[in-house]
Length: 380
Image (cartoon, rainbow, N blue to C red; front, side):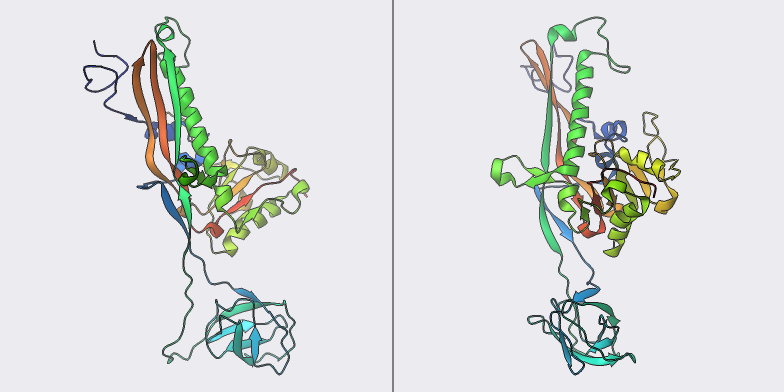
């Protein structure tokens, strides 16, 4: 007799399932509020265990003087001349503006300049001063001009395999009157749901906190989480950590992202930030983001001081943590979406497992921000 717990055409041994159940659509709905990162970001297929995270940057708007500048100098030396080109206008720390009149020497950092551009006064500047890039100026008739090529920078990311086995004894499965949560019909259903929650929790937390490990090391690839990927705007010891204010949050998240060219529109926060918002006197309002297929409202909030940025509570974030995301540049790359793989019956036990494989993908890490290390919120 065919086993009632398997699906599809069975072999004569009747112990191997022929169909695996893709459950990810139900999973991303059921856990939409508990695991908002892996359930709400777009998913794209990934055909390899290793793929590349790509960072593309704008040319920097500032540079540092590597040597003092006297009033008679016709050249300046900067720590890094690669962002500049012929015709650029720079503003020195003294307020004087200079115009670059030849292609910079990237190897030495030396730049030939015309002093006192735009009617400014020639002045003395000291080594270490920060200079500002105002913009490029050309006659419109130049040819063969060198430009600035900012090559994309790639870093490897590894698809992680998550697997949670389920095993229920035949005696337990045949028990009448077993108390299961609403919607579950048997002990196997109950255990499967517990294992699925563990699987989704693992996916969510490793997408936050994974450090990453090449599969060649142990054979078990580990993904890099957002905390590891975000480098430019990762704040681990924020200013005013013991009296953290709304303005501090803006400084460490929205302002940091926008300074690097990001367009942040989502703020994932640990549950403590809901207390923080109340402490700051911010009236948080629920946004009508609809309901999942099970009729549960999808949690999305807004606070006036965030200027329309969506606020999402992420229960699995560690205390006092906030992640600011440019959501168009975040996705989950999956080799295998969540699915139930029934093993069949072994002895007097019914077995199966939940499996998923993938990794978070974050483009242009400087467009995002990570903040942790806060110890107390303050209204003033």
